[in-house]
Amino acid sequence: MKSNDFMTAVVIVFYVVLLAGCEKPQTVFDYRINVLGTNTEITIIGQSDAEAREVAVAVEQELRQLDHVGYTFKPEGELHELNDAISRGGAMSVSPELKGLINTAKKIYAASGGLVNPAAGELIALWEFHCKKEDCDESPHAEAVWEMVAAKDREVIEARPAMSDLIISGNVVSSVNPVVKLEFGDMIRGYALDKAREHMKKAGVENAMIDIGGNIRSLGSRGEHPWWAPLWDGYRQHSNGHIELDDNEALVTVRVFDRSMGMEDDVYRHVVDPRSGMPVSGIQFVTVLHEKALVANVAAAALLVAGLDDWTEVTEKMGVRSVMMVTRDGVIYTSTAMEERIHWNERPERQHLVP
Image (cartoon, rainbow, N blue to C red; front, side):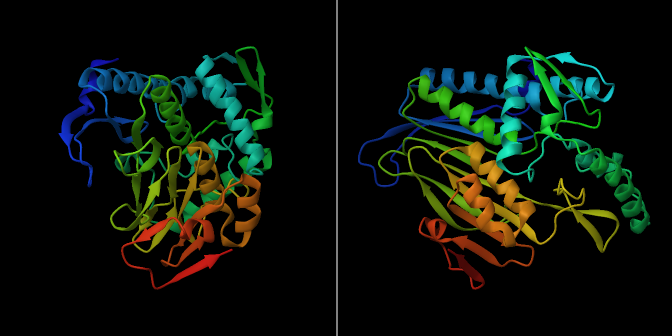
């Protein structure tokens, strides 16, 4: 591990507490890092300090490997190298980790009916969603920016980048379409949550939770009580309830953020519809509860793009039942299955149940 990785905030807390009504004390080990572009917390209960530390460090190493291999916004990362090779019409031998991510992305593309398209990363790049504020090419003439990006979007859309364009021969990856640019987006965090839980379970941990950017994966319980996850608003500034998680569940939220185009009243959303190349509108965030974090992640992203009209089609296709969708103007839609799991602090006034 690089020395500067430790500088990105490894915070370790080991303590003994009475967990919410438990009669016997439980050891709690908290390990906090920054990885995959966000804050991450690993909580392990019932292990000794040395045992918990060993497992947490091993999980961190696995997450940092994923960060290097598949996180789009690392210029020195393997995915950046592969995208560069594809853009030049070349091929590249990839690591087993990246090959696994690509194969997973192929399945995601098919399962979502193209609503989640990891091959359409060029659309994200065109909108400059991930550049630093001081480096973004913003213009005081927002209309001109829209026209310029929309024109480039059309070129990409017409090229129809798809995961099926990728050819994998052994460990060598190439593409029949040079416009393909892999962007795993939020998918990699769901993938990482599942990997982390699997690692901890194999290491003999019985009770743990991992939180990557507010997305949570459970293992076992929190003492004599279940783990629980807060229900945040779209900006993680306010929680109006929580969900108690069973032994093997994940609660994942995919949200959109507004960004200015150089004029105070002209904003656009940071999630792009891969079918049109334009930012999504209407939905602020989607939260999904499922046994697998990756499935929850992809389903939430697909629903964010599809919107309320295609709720039933997407949820049935993705195999998810517990869903909450919040519109940009604050109207909440929950499935019956999700509503049964929510413990509201105060029931929302503008809420609708979706069968």
